[in-house]
Amino acid sequence: MTNAGTPSRPDSGTNLDPWYGLYADRTAGLSASEVRALFAVASRPEVVSLAGGMPFVSGLPAELVAGAFERMMRDNGPQALQYGSGQGVPALREQILEVMALEGIRASVDDVVVTTGSQHALELVSKLFLNPGDVVLAEGPSYVTAMVVFNSFQADINHVPMDEFGLIPQALREAIARIKAAGKTIKFLYTIPSFSNPAGVTLTWERRLEVLEICRDNEILVLEDNPYGLLYFDSPPPHAMRSVDEDGVIYLGTFSKTLAPGFRVGWALAPHAIREKLILANEAAVLSPSSFSQLMISEYLSAADWKGQIDTFRGIYQERRDAMLSALAEFLPQLRWTVPGGGFYVWATLPDNMDSKAMLPRAVRELVAYTPGTAFYADGSGRNNIRLSFCYPTPEFIREGIRRLSTVINGEIDLLNTFSQTTPLATVPLKQGIASPPSNIG
Image (tube, rainbow, N blue to C red; front, top):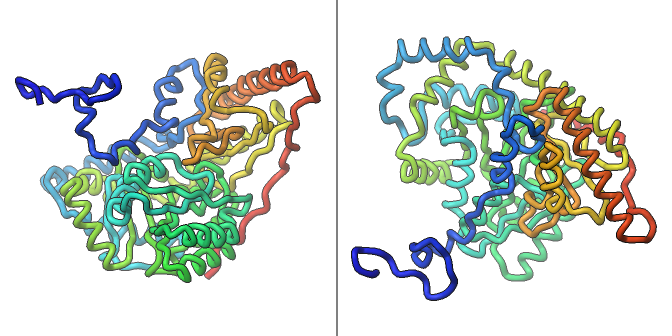
């Protein structure tokens, strides 16, 4: 330290942060995600954003929320404005059991821990389990901000390939064998099995059982993240993995997609011993999750037709998915893409020689935004992939966004073909559809 308490600058480099040399090593894993970096640009009104996964909260009638607020403040105002339990409001935890029952989960209210969004639950689980150098297995591609969390705890993220039916069990076996042979410790498998982010695909029931068996045989915990499971279109996805394995699965849920993200309320359903540590970690991080938000949601679930509202959201998102698929077929038939049965996202594949991250500034100049595929891999893969989000724009804006995107992609293909002075770039045929996973079983 220099005079007046000013820290000395690091010995090397020209970093402008005077505290740079004092940060913990784990902060090297903290970086702004490519999705977050897009929000400033994508929020401009003239830009059609197909990038962020923002729910269409305008589809939630204002009177439902206003009514819940008035009743909650009338009946429980002092409690709503006070500190609460580190585990969460008991009444809401009871109601969360009703929500999870829709996906085949039977549990005790004592095993539910309310968190400040499911993202916070991800951070708490990582804090409990990850030492520097530990391995996290994750689908390839996987949720971008989960990887930011895992990186912040200095984990080694290993991706397991997916296909149109979700994570590939044989690839999981091979990854586990390879990592164990290298003498590394695998702490858990992170998966979004229903309408995954970003791929939009769903793990079949048979594969869910096989993945659970593989992890059980290798003593690997499963971290099942399920933000989108109730937002199906034609038929429900298979039951949650937690429905058949109480001891080997931590299940994460959230109200951000089925109600509104502004409440910041999620939860973790964990085996007993893990639950106790989650409560302690929750208290250490935030003392208690917001009583106000929890009681608001509890009042909403008590008085509103919340199942009917979720059904309304399904109709809104299905219409927007259909608009995106129709526009892709019209303007970009040379590409390949997934056909999600629910959720928020389509995963598109560009010709092999294209770089979606390098192309993004040109897309923004054409007033359209997407998320490059590289954002969803820890190792920089996904260069010729893009995630397209259909949850927020209207069908008309989605069509216009895809039209603008086609101008960028076709222009890029023409440019690359011109400079290659060889045969045209190979493209992939239009994927007409993906076989649906089995219905709920058991």
